[in-house]
Length: 302
Ligand SMILES: NC(=O)c1ccc[n+]([C@@H]2O[C@H](COP(=O)([O-])OP(=O)(O)OC[C@H]3O[C@@H](n4cnc5c(N)ncnc54)[C@H](OP(=O)(O)O)[C@@H]3O)[C@@H](O)[C@H]2O)c1
Image 1 (cartoon, helix red, strand yellow):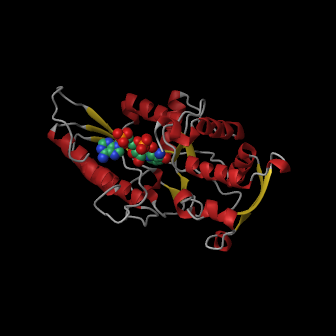
Image 2 (cartoon, rainbow, N blue to C red):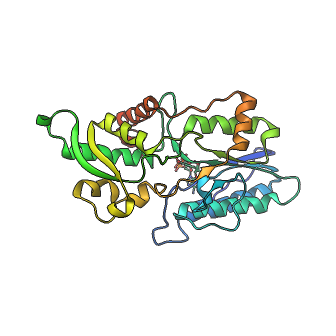
Image 3 (spheres, rainbow, N blue to C red):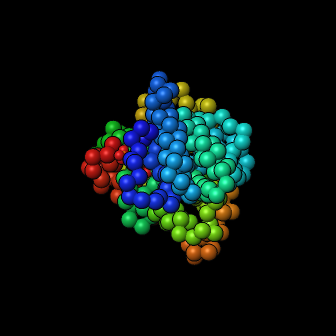
């Protein structure tokens, strides 16, 4: 995408699931490159293809963070007017939603939008193919452990470290199997279609739980929560390792919106689905699986 969509040689196409995207957070000096090129121009190309081929049903994977900096309970609706965004990625996904919204204005068409929050691996097995966000940060915690580990000083390494953020704030990470199942259930059932779905975590792990999991998994102690203004830009050497990329790795640490999940809950009830809560054991299992894959390096992915 955007410029190599196939001619329809297989007969009629009834529906499209548009999932492909560039997950680059920033345009890095080329506003026409990714993420704009894939997410906006690519979506436009899909919609033009859909119109040319009389496709009437579109299922589009977006992100919960098309809400940008909006506060309060984030509705399962298009966000108007355009919010301010933390990243180019969010802005391009918002623009993609806007294009889909324009497409569905023509009668006889149906649009269903899926908005996951941050994806992590499978809640039962830990399997993942995507090692961004949660995993990138975990890798850095692993580097911290390696750098400060002293074999003559016990397994748990003491690293005094201020953590910018509040212990009670949450990280909206969501297991990929939940998101995949929801997409499949909704695509299978016409009465669920034509809506926007927040595929987010109704009971997200707190910063404190995540800290406990990282400490236990990597064998660390000495972290304490602090005001981001006191830490960012004023880091010790150990803190720099984690927080120099602060805005990139933890873009949601200062903004943790609550998502309305009314539509998603209706599907849960109708199909008997229980959200796989990210307990301490599950988070440790996710970390363990990814660490055994060398954080994505063992299957060729970064
Ligand atoms: N990961 C998250 O935390 C997260 C959170 C919320 C929403 N989402 C959304 O979920 C969807 C899937 O993301 P993911 O996490 O599965 O990402 P991913 O692992 O990076 O997969 C993205 C897919 O898009 C394809 N793609 C990228 N650019 C393309 C282009 N220009 N033309 C054709 N195909 C292209 C990639 O193909 P190749 O493999 O061939 O490169 C890949 O199959 C995206 O719409 C994303 O915005 C992801």
